[in-house]
Image (tube, rainbow over all chains, first blue to last red; front, side, top):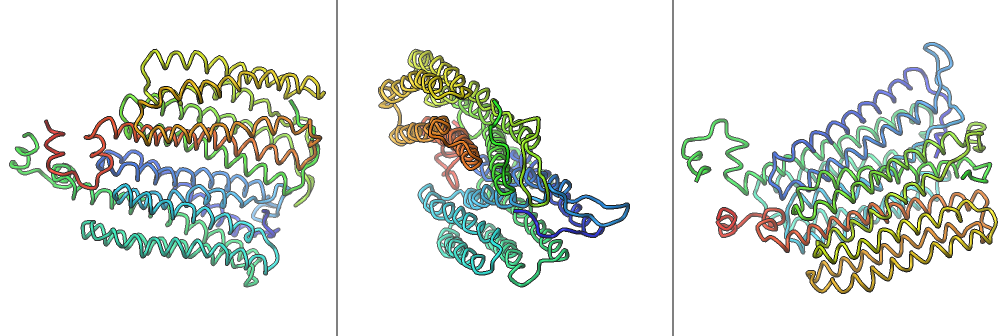
Length: 275
Length: 275
């Protein structure tokens, strides 16, 4: 999939480049933060942190590739002049490769952090993961399609598993939220809102060509939109997962809560911890 | 071993490039995931995780080399145009170097995760590892052979150790599965099916030239086939090994199971853990 845009102004090129670099830095250091913070949650929540870190790490790798391709794909014509497309082109298909790997993992981390009973967890994942793979796989032919009709048909097909994912997250998952501490249940609700709000950016960008938005400005807007949505959907999402894991750790274990959250342990708590 | 293909369409080049990148990302992040997840299994299963991570790490290194060689080996002729072979050529022999290192290790991780008695483990590995080295070494002369007759003869020679490996895994290993928990025995059976299904792709790709499949489409299909088979045989395989190690850890140690899996530990479990 090569971009149809053949010329970018100097400012447009720099904007896209800087946004890609922002996304890469966010992904890489969120991944490292989540890895080195494993000791800040109880063991049963560490799997969720490792999966979140993996998601951000995979995305960092793909932004590295995207930046390289963008750098090779457009060359400056003069000092301060326009950038024109080179024979290497700009390969954006990495985004779909990235999503194919990271979207199922995002759903996995969402379920993992709740530490649900084994049967509930298995049942939710058996529904969510195949649906997310199907959603990405059905979206790709539409993204590369040039005509409007196949684009709309593949887009509609991809929307079906997306709606099913929302059903599972908003109806089936809700049944198990009653067992969670109140502030955890509230955070999970915010997490779902974040998921819908950020995932909503992708179909909008997808439909740009249908709305006739296909010039250089639309190209820049789409790249910025995808990048910002990626940072919110992976980094911010991962940090909310971390916050939930911290809250649940504190709720599960008073000694851990004292160690991690209280400014200075009381003498009674010290006595309890020592006992 | 240079590819005989001299021209790839833009779409063919991008497809192969993206599949290589997908394989590299999968290998690299599965390796990191398995390394940082060591604390998620009991010490006696960590060797299997380290070996699995090593397999994926070695494969990530080789995909990095394969991508570089592919990128140097084919150059674009015009914007959106074909890619033609350069004097550097495309070196694919890395695959055999990779397999020579990773296939014995894959068999080692399969046996390691079962934590069998020392004598059984040694007996199985003494059979499996030399056979796997022989299988790869005998396959290589056939891969580079241009004539059909030597290709078939080396291929047949390589099949003998392959069949012996299957015999050891399906007949000898089965005798020790009775000692495993039921869900572990079921997972090991699925693991063997995964091994046969993915390893079966390699001889099919190997025989492409014999079937007269040697154009650009066959080249693309072979690269995609090898890459997808590699991801399933190493990453998915490694993750199933991880899952088996988690199940066995939980079965071996109730306190570990409580720490890692249960939502909130009961007071009795806390008392047991403290005792």
